[in-house]
Image (cartoon, rainbow, N blue to C red; front, side, top):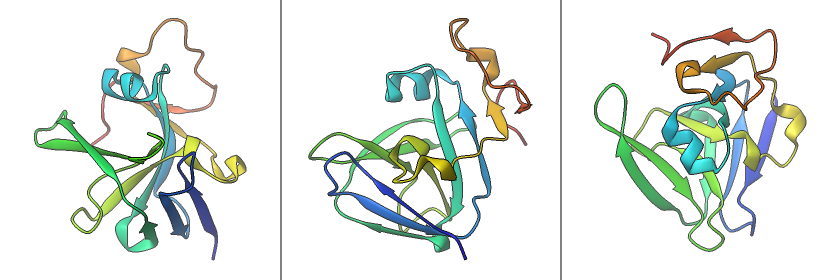
Length: 135
């Protein structure tokens, strides 16, 4: 079984993910762009049961496209953005690929919210593309 590890810049907030991600790709929505300070966020989806998260988090909540709230977790010490969802509440989480210890684990296959992609961002070829969030 594959184990994927990562965490924030200072190392206070860490995770271990076991198994194969449910999906990997890029999100170009405005919220992800602003949260990352870039043109997108690279993400990996995991079932909550596959994750062990250690350390304190700072949570930021924003409106989600399908209603409800989207939660982003960063380190309260260094500010590094690490994962999405409320640990212990949600049944799945998004790990932000920039937080991986070994970036070779990130093998994107999809792109979401492409309608919001800035013209200056070059999207990799061969991705399955969705204008917004897939069903």
